[in-house]
Amino acid sequence: MAKINSSVAWKSPSNIAIVKYWGKKETQIPMNPSLSFTLQNCCTETKIEYSEGDGKIQFLYDGKERPDFLPKIEKFFELIQLPFLKELDLRIHSKNNFPHSAGIASSASSMSALSLCITEIEQKHYNPSINFLQAASLRSRLGSGSASRSVYNTASLWGKTLESEDSSDNYAIDWSKNIHSEFMDVQDWIFLVNQKEKSVSSTDGHDLMHNHPYKMQRIEQAINNISYVIKALKNGDWESFISVCEEEALSLHALMMSSRPGYLLLEPDSVRLVHSIQKFRNETKLPVCFTIDAGPNIHLLFPKKIEEQVNAWIQLVFPEYISGNNIIKDCMGKGPEKI
Image (cartoon, rainbow, N blue to C red; front, side, top):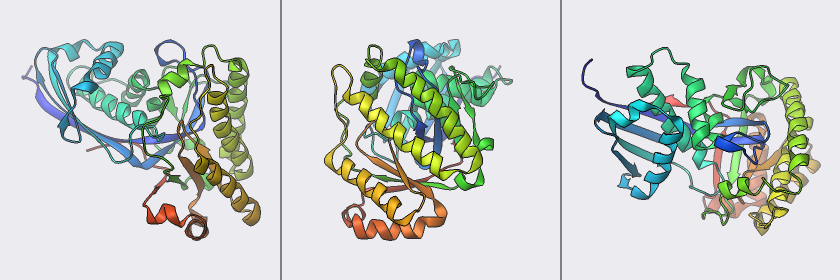
């Protein structure tokens, strides 16, 4: 076999969970199933230059060497158990185009991009018949649970559920063919309330679910909400979708507040945005709603056909977010791409 000396590169997006994954068992197995929309613009680009060697790893973020990231990558490589990685030297280049650790699931895009690169190396040199996306999703999960959902376009389902025989706790599955046309152009405009690193990491938040007083009730709620949201997405039912979407967002933060110890990631402006979105919907009857990841930033979801009305409302009610360049205008996307 010819001597290995090559490179691979992938761009992978973040995703926004509608039914939230919160709490995990060993090796990133979720306590409950989750369903997410794949985003288009909030992405991580990762390139790996690799050659025959003895397992040396160099990591660069935004062009600067970051040895402090190496322990996480080394742990990830131990979890995915690919012997060939010990026979290669890797130079990993990575960059994000959105704020890190502010509640926009940067780990989802970064770990899925890394997993896609590693899986391509395996496919090119060691295992050409591999089920590429399934393997990439499984490995992404071991790096960051939500990353398992970022390898598919449009929408993904992760976690074993009676709603799908193909569903699995080990990897996500493509849910794009189960989405009504009403939801195929969902916009996700993210209000950046605070771009600083979160006071409590998602990893620590997941750990607090082990002994959470409402653990079993949360699992039951998520199982029911998966069923409700799948039906809403299939039938083009915005009203039911909005009900589940906002309940899930508020439940996530209620779980944080009722943990032991409890903590609060929402800020005063997070609450102001939530109230304003609900008031706008009630007054206009337009299909707009919010969701929130594990941070203070607010995601505004709506179909593209009402973009003009939504934009006019934001200019009137939240001009400071526009003037401060504190809105990321994203949308449902087509998934990762090789670059």
